[in-house]
Image (tube, rainbow, N blue to C red; front, side, top):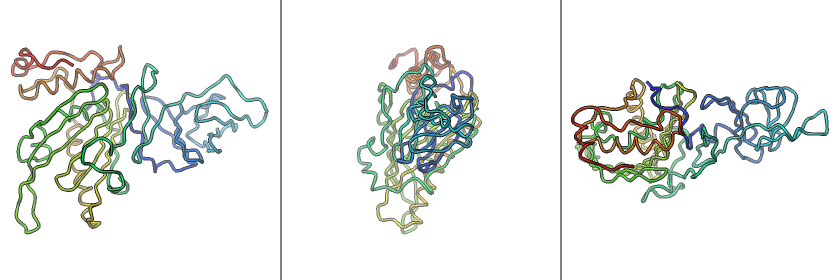
Length: 351
């Protein structure tokens, strides 16, 4: 389960759902980062996310609110508010309220996924959220892939896990053998830490049944890009190309919602094969989730020498996504256990 050693209010882009969950003209109540929100799609198709409460008398716009053109109308007295949170209509007088304004959330949509920007300090986004199809060499374009829904994703709510579990998966090469049944320990091909993202590439071997019934060995390369502490993208091509996104968004100080989205390539395969590839991708994340559900975040961790540098570097890199004064901004430098302590003392990248 999650630990109070990390704040549940990190900075960055976070998923709030899939685009098809909010058709044009629909209103949906949301709760993330300990706040009540409302999302709606204008009649022209624009996504808008606002604080939930009407600035008139405090009605929750997510329950009974309706879309009128580009605005959302309060169910209590009919006041209308724009996607920018400004009052546009008071139905029983001509003059609008130019003083009060509903808080707004910067939102984006990519590849059928909805995101919001969160920053506890109120700062505007300093980077964009990408399309998964722009991230990896050899992945191809969106029209070469099946949409995520139906069949290529799942969502789990009420999880006592922290978003940082996803990013630490990117440096945890050893778990692939035991959680994902790789036949050998993966080889870390590269690991690059940048300002808002880090990239890693792993090479590993799996066994699979060939068309003639024999067991063949397949080398599978996995490229991953982690954006902030909430979004983990990956690309694999051993058994057909698959792009994926694993995202964890805090609901409050104790719980999160996890989404997994898999885009599998078309490549002329029949429907049964496509669904099998989707289920295979989903099963890998469910295997991680089986661990995360019951995991305690340990700081400092006791690490083996071989893995110490990766975990040390990713935790130092992640500090920047926790505003000053929030738990996680100052992560522990030391590594528990004599094996990893030796690795720390001998040097290593400081990020």
